[in-house]
Length: 87
Image 1 (spheres, helix red, strand yellow):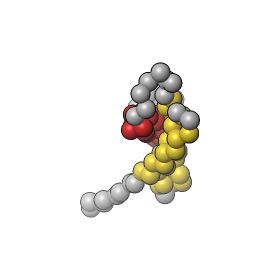
Image 2 (cartoon, rainbow, N blue to C red):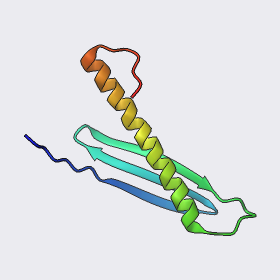
Image 3 (cartoon, rainbow, N blue to C red):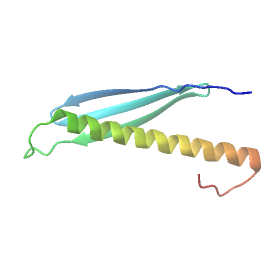
């Protein structure tokens, strides 16, 4: 039996005084997973908002990814009895 699943990640980005913050949210049947990413523009740099958005979003997704890997490792451990897991 083939089962198709779809997970959607919503990324909210806000910027204030050269600081950009992104929050990536993933809703699954087990609850919500969140990753947060920050970026800061050096005052000497030219203002290019897209760069801060990209950096903050990438960092938020990386943190979310790390959370998912940790959850998967814990689930594998619970189901196999393995203690030291690297996913």
